[in-house]
Image (cartoon, rainbow, N blue to C red; front, top):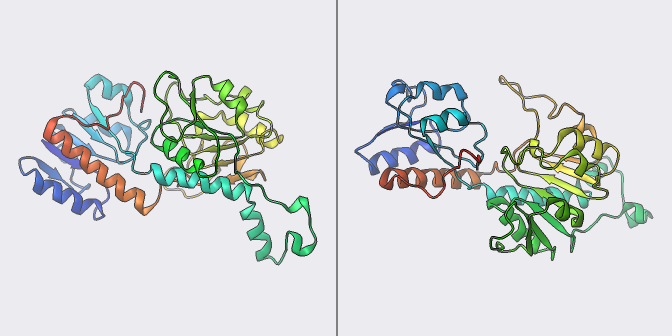
Length: 326
């Protein structure tokens, strides 16, 4: 087998891949991304982050792709299905993403950013300066929570929310499976689950079934609710989100995953075609919920586990269903 790595080199990936090459001497490992694809027709497997989807056209012998994160919607699904290429992913960032989702929620309800910015300018809040209820912050204790998605991130979120004695309902299409740990129940009826919730956490991958799942109609009937999106932007209807926030229907939102991203090396740009980022009831995050040293290390380790399992057995527990994209 010829395994080509398109991961940055030198980096933490280099020693890990060198160790794999020593562990599997009967296989050829190309670790330098500059030369990894010098013989594209011979490549059996790639370890790759986000690359140009057209790259896979030339890899005529490709059998497997090892993705060092969870999402697979960036891959050319139809081409890979046609060729029978298998895709393996990891969930090493689940704890970090869940922690970020909770942190953003606490920051919003605690008015942390507002208090911090004002005090930097010498402006005080609270009873010390004779202010009353208008200056209070809000606790999330006992608030009814809905987690869209009961996978790795959703499960970690449910565990964290349980510490605040929050009733946690999980949404998934199948309601007959066992209730995962830390969830109070699973609800397959989205509208019913949404109506009961005060806090909603979207932790779903982007698939044909989840795109636009949180519809404009749902959002415009969300009076007083708070939405956190750490899954994928287009799971939530873009226009509906803007209108519900602008008109004060949603109490607020914390958003890490967006609709537009800078391209071509740019480092600036609005994250939506609507001015969501200008609204006062939104806490903004530039899709970095899983960008921790701990998550990146664990994702690398899980990727190596996947690769080793595939080389040894031809199988791996963390395989993406390309038809479902998760």
